[in-house]
Image (cartoon, rainbow, N blue to C red; front, side, top):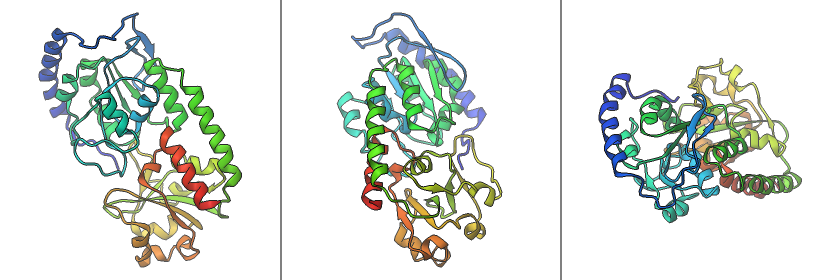
Length: 331
C-alpha cells in the first residue's frame, strides 16, 4: 500500500545541494543556549547502531506517529511531520493530540509531499533526526536515509516495533530521557486493568477494517497496534485474515493488507467488526448503505463499531483515549 514514490535518480540529485546547505548552516553554529556536549552515545536503529548527541537540543521527527512520545518525554522538537494515518490536517497544522505541545515549543511543520523535503530539514540545523516506523512518512525517511544521515545523526524506528510501549522505550533511549517511561506505562497498566474489568466484548472473532478513499477493502493485520489493544481488553481476533485474502504482498512499513472486493465476504466473515474511517473514506452509516457490506455477518448481526482514525496506530495519548471509548461502548 505504501509505495516508493521518489526515484533513486531524484534522491541522488538532491544529495549535493543538501550537503552544501548543511555545510553553510554548520558554519552558523548551534543557536541553542542549552546545548551540552558530554560525548555521543550509541543507540540502536533499524539501520544499525547510530552515535547520537548526549543531550540533543534540535530534534526533527519525520513520522507523526512518533512525535507524541517526544513531547511526553519533554524532548525539544524543532520540526515534526504532522501526518497521521487517515487524519486530515491543513498545511502546517498539527494533529490535535500534540498541537498544543508543538505550539509551546515552537515546532515547525515539516512540509508534506511525494518527496521528503531535505532542504527544509537541513535548514532546521538538527542535531538528531528520528524517522522510520510504520506508514508512508516513515518509509520516506527510510528511503532518504543516506541523505538524512549526511545532515545529522539519523535514527530509524524498526517497522516491526508496533507496540506503543516498545516505541516509547525506543524513543526514550534515543533521546536519553528514561525518567517518564515507567510512570507513563504504569498509568496505562492501571487504566488497562480498569478497562478490562468493565468491558464486555461481543462473542466471536473480530476484524479491524480501514475505510479508505479508494474504497478498496483494507484490514489491519492481527499484530497491528489497534488489534493488539483489542486483544488486550478481551476481544478475540480473527488471525486468519491474511490467509483468507491469499496472503497479499504489503510494504514492510504497512500494518494492513488490501484485497479485491470479490474476496470481501471471504476475508471479513468474522461476526464482530471495527471500522476506522480514514480521510476520504466512508463512514459506518455509508458502509451500511452499501449492499456488499450490509450482507457481511457483522453487519447482519449488528456488531459493527466505529473508532476514530487516531485510534488506528495509538501512541500513549491516543491509547488512553481509545480505552475510554471502548469502556464507554462495551461497558
